[in-house]
Amino acid sequence: MRMVSADDYLLFVDEVLDDMVRIVTELGDELANQRPDVPDSNSPYAILTHCLGVMEYWAGYMVAGRSIQRDRAAEFRAAGPVEELVERTRRARRRLQSDLANLEPYAPPRGHPKHQEDAGLPMHKTQGGALIHAYEDLARHRGQMEITRDMIRVSVRTSGQG
Image (cartoon, rainbow, N blue to C red; front, side):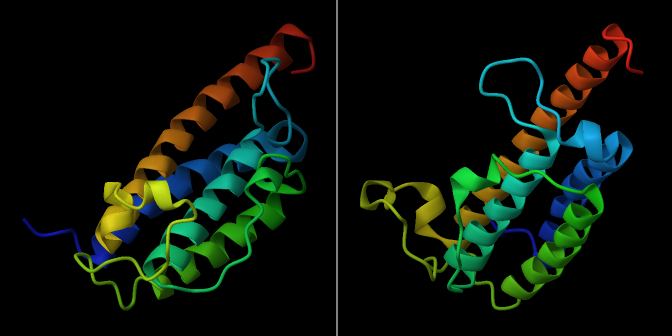
């Protein structure tokens, strides 16, 4: 079995990111930063910020072996103007393409798992496994963002704001 090419992988990731950017853009600054009235929920802005961190860790660190600075907890507290987030997403896409330039799908990751007990998991065995995990996470969060958007829209309609 062969892994998909880096170019094919980027097409799949771009589709997910396009959907997420469309959601935050359509919601605008105020609603993109709103959290549904559900315990421990995240705003669409925070979800996309977290996804950029996912790409940075799994492709930048684990696959490319780049040194990164990531504050995962802060990703979920993130808020701000949508246009800045859209620009950060554009830069992250370019960086992802660069991170995959020397991809060796069956080779061990260039980064090392944060927790040694995770070292035997598929996403830590090969660079391809790390990328599959990253895509899985992005796709899951796209669905979360779609539901979050829908909940925010209903909340706005029922409160008379929209």
